[in-house]
Image (cartoon, rainbow, N blue to C red; front, side, top):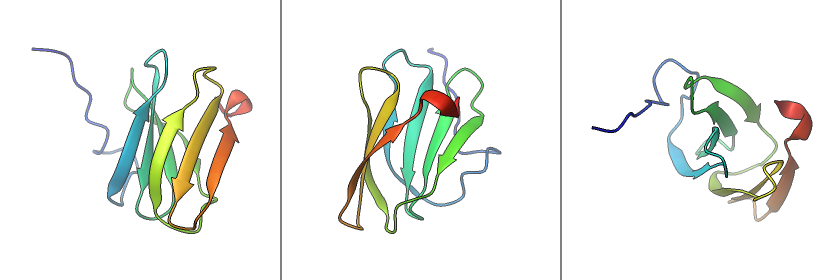
Length: 89
């Protein structure tokens, strides 16, 4: 059986998740939630690394950019945003 990590338990994610994206090297997972937040989770530890809370509606899509330093997101607030993750861990 393959190794799995449970992201939803004991890491601060409280609302339903709508979408996920795995980073290019598999070190992080971005999770878009119904409460308009994006959670960046470390795949090695399952711990929450970062929360992005700037959308005004449910997150409907997230996608890591191949350069590893940016994340795209879209939301019910009718915006698509490009996030710079370089200085955020």
